[in-house]
Image (cartoon, rainbow, N blue to C red; front, side, top):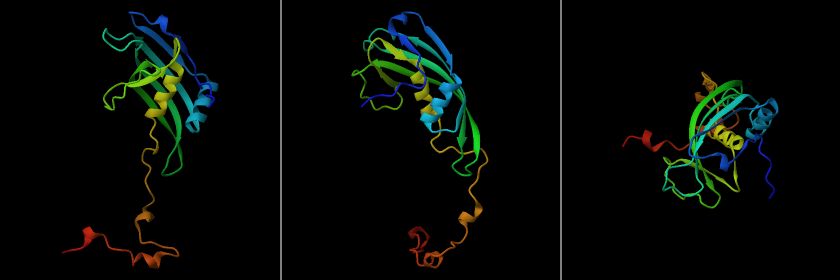
Length: 177
C-alpha cells in the first residue's frame, strides 16, 4: 500500500536534537490548509500554526525517543451536526507526544501516558504531527454554540407509522409495581 505524502511536511533531522531544547515553529500556507481541510473533511481551515520544543529524554528511557511538547493553534470552519450551519471552531491546545523508533512502541494502554508517534530513519515530521494533533482535538460531532434540536422532535409521532406508536412496549421503569 502506498502512503500519500503528508499535507504539511516539516522533517527534522534527529541529530539536530541534542542536550538542549530544539525549538521549531511553522504557520501553514493556504495550499497546506486546503489539503488539511480535505483530509479532515472540513469545509475550510482558515489558520493553522504549531510550535514545538523537542528534547532527548532523561537517561534510562528507551533509545531513540524524542519528547515533543507543542502548542497547536487553528481556526477551522465546521458544519454543525444539529443545524447544518457553518461556524468557526478556535483551537488553542497544548500537547505532549513522544517520537519512538518504529517497532519500539509501548503496549501500555494507560490513557495518562504520552501518545507515541513512530518514526523510521533519521527524521521526524513535525508537520504531520501537527495535523494528527488537530485531527485528535476536533470534536467528531461539531455543534455550533447555541444550536438546539427542533422542538417538534419531542412531540407526538406523526406520519404513516404514528398509529403504530401506541402499540409500542412501555418502558419497564414507567410501570408501577
